[in-house]
Image (cartoon, rainbow, N blue to C red):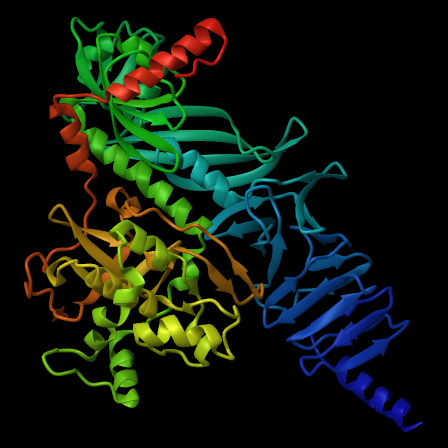
Length: 619
């Protein structure tokens, strides 16, 4: 009998809370203290913040402050832009009393696995956000079995490509500012309607290229693109054979242009800025010339001299020599063509494209989890003082004692710099709060390499684990132990922007051919606290940041075992300089090189034979 009274008292306590849930099925409420209250046949139940609602033992919702966290559910969860409640099977969660309610749900798509999607009701629309990229819709949304559906004429149309992926695909070829993204139904299929723009300054104003793109929400393929060119807000019309370009800082019309759309696509950046001399757009070539190409990675070029400059995640940058420009622009695998006269413009375009590629890489590797590894310098100094760390004899800063080449000599015996980087990249990132139950904790390379494997708090037993400070300090220690001079390698503490998340981080810079190149040791596997599992990732290659801009917001300090500066002083040769890409140097170099890749030409010849005779030639 006492148990019955206790249950009734607890039931009345729960009923006095918000927000309201109208229940039509059996429910069980689990509080943050894990107490279970069975409620049967109630018409109305009020749920306290930070509690969990289980509907028919299948749908799970956690309400915390203004966020409704929906876990995997086989029951449909319906969100309407015109109503102030969320329907979960036959249960309605009233959100009128919640200020700016947010629905957070994990969605699985072919490109993103268990990806957090945030849904908000805004006026008479719903917003769908992934990784700071948002699309709006006036349709109802349904979530079921970790899938997202758009409701149209009582049909559920699956959204297989989320807004962040759409944004990346649209910006890959022509980097542009996306101003608006709408998710709607067209011809009974879900599509994204994207409005974006590009601006080019000219001597008498601004040229704006307004672009409307339609992307299939099931496949991610671009279905249609429409462009309008305006100067100072006024629409400029093109006749059928006219092409608008910016020449000598003026907007001009080229006339009698054949293959106009192909030339716009392949020979112009921002739709109006030429990547080759104007006369090459208008007239055939009279002699062989060198061109730099952006191509798809699997593009097969015609039989001609060529030199591969850069191979990235999605593209090749290649220099070719030809007198047939038409052949190049008609090749589907060739994305852009530039010549020596406009090489600066091609470099600028390539930088923008590779910046989009780097953003995609950062998202896919989930590097934003590494952003808050290092507290800011004032707090870091307090931590060092509390730990009793002081600068050692002959050193300026206590940070320097965490670079210890002698302690890691055996780890790197006989390894190249590239192999050392791959070794460092194999360490598992685990946050300090998980491993040490502290906001900040630094270990020496020896302790990191040996002790962390057996720590009781190590969630990946037997693995070498820690966060960016240990991984950066250890990588520099190993490079120093392998013979890299102190002048040519350093740890950097500063702020980075990983996918819109800005915070403290530690990374490595290595001097190659007189220029600083970034190495990101934490791009390998990491322990995901939310999922409670290790996420295996291959990270970025040794030369990745040689061509992609590393997203530094600010630098706090450079150091190794021998040198230290927090004033960007020239404490050693080149130490007052920042890391920069060598993209421009390599592209410019492609125009002055005397020789070409003979093996590449030979490979093309083999491909040509395969196509001609339809069999494999083996040598």
